[in-house]
Structure formats: structure tokens, C-alpha cells
Length: 254
Ligand code: NAP
Image (cartoon, rainbow, N blue to C red):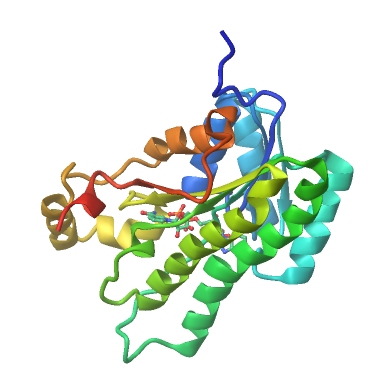
């Protein structure tokens, strides 16, 4: 029987995949047969991530660029498409977090969050659509968050950006579905990564999180891989405009 989750012959660009969730998704999709293109800001980080994937017999290349810079996005996607090959799946994963109270939130931090978390999704999706539409196929997966649905003290701009990514996912679906392009999102709950290190190390926060989360624990980043394989594979060819929340049940409870 055909394996509907098989990703052999598929090429995936994952933004911000030099480390953290992006790298784990790269490893997980690579294990299912996908060819991986790593992206990160830093060339050294890209090279190291590519080497690690290759050591697991995954076909991988990489390209450093800033996802919030339109010229770099346009030039880099052109370079990938013309020199490496067609991008079948784009995962918009790059993201940042900055924590301040509302009153003290610096305008520069707001701008960075909106540019990197939100504008980048628009820029990359707009550009990749120019290649995917003539091919009549493609998949875009946007990494959202529980904060696409919920607010929380000190991270109002982050929540605003992730709420926008949820709506970008729906808007892109509406515009692209007729071209056989599926646009879906994955909304991680609280995962133990570099981004959340300060919270993981904060005992008071962790014990609050365990009472707030029905699964009563932090998520392990590798637990996001199943949703990414599903949304990258032919198993999800008629699934469009949805967000899969992988959150240990947080959004199901008050
Ligand atoms: P992370 O460990 O901080 O990794 C983020 C990656 O994005 C880093 O490799 C970073 O590169 C890269 N990056 C940052 N700005 C970039 C830019 N302008 N251009 C290209 N790459 C850039 O974060 P993570 O926890 O893996 O998060 C990944 C995604 O999941 C984010 O969208 C985040 O909002 C989302 N998320 C995470 C959690 C969680 O619990 N961790 C929960 C919900 C959603 P540098 O290292 O060079 O800065």
C-alpha cells in the first residue's frame, strides 16, 4: 500500500531551522525522505545544521538570509529555485520573542517582532506562490502558537504577530487553494527550546504551567514532527486553512 506520509522526492525549505523547533522539523521530515534546505541568519549555523543532517544520511543544503528583508527573500528563493531545485514545501518557522510589560515595551522590539514573525510569512509566501502557482501544487506551513488564540502578560506584540500568522494562513488558503496549494499552520504550546529557556528555568512558571496544561508537562520539540509530516504529505491534500494546535490540551481548558 502506498505510504501517504512518504516525503521522498519532496524538497522543503524551513526558515529559522539552524536550531530549535525548525531544526527538529528538518530532521523529522528528512527522516521521512524529504530533501531539506536549512535557513538561518547566520551562515556558520546553517553549515553546522546541514552537516548534522548529512550525518544522519539526510539530503540537505542551506542558505543564510534574513526572512524579514524583502530583497534577501526574493534573491534567495530565486537562487534556490534556479540552483537547487523547486521548493515543494515552505515552512515559515523563523520567529523571535521579546518580553516586557506593556508600558515599557520598546518600539524597536515591537518592530522586530512584527517584521520577523509576521511580515516574513507574507514575504516568503507571496514570493513562493509565484513559483508554486505555475506548477499547480505546493504546501505552505506556518508555525503559529497558542498565542495565536490567547494573550499573556509581557508578550502582547508576540501574541499580535502570531494571531496575524493564523489569519495569514486562512487568507493565503483562500487565495491559493484553487492552485492546489495547501496552506496550514501548526500551533505549538509550551515547548522546551532556546526561546523558552528563561521560562523552563523559572520553577514558579513551570509549576503554573503544569497545572494549566492538561498534559501537565512541557512539550518536547520532537512532538511537533508528526503534525509537520502530515501537513507536508499527500495525506493532507484536501486539508486547507487549518491550524493544528500541538499543546497538551491547553486550548481545550480554562
Ligand atoms: P529558537 O530556538 O529561538 O529558534 C528560532 C530560529 O529562528 C533561530 O535559529 C534564529 O536564528 C532564527 N531566526 C531568527 N530571526 C531570523 C531571521 N530574521 N531570519 C532567519 N532566521 C531567523 O525558537 P523556537 O522555539 O525554535 O521557535 C521556532 C518557531 O516556533 C517560532 O516561530 C516560535 O514563535 C514558534 N513557537 C515556539 C514555541 C516554544 O515553546 N518554543 C511555542 C510556540 C511557537 P539565530 O539563532 O541566528 O537568531
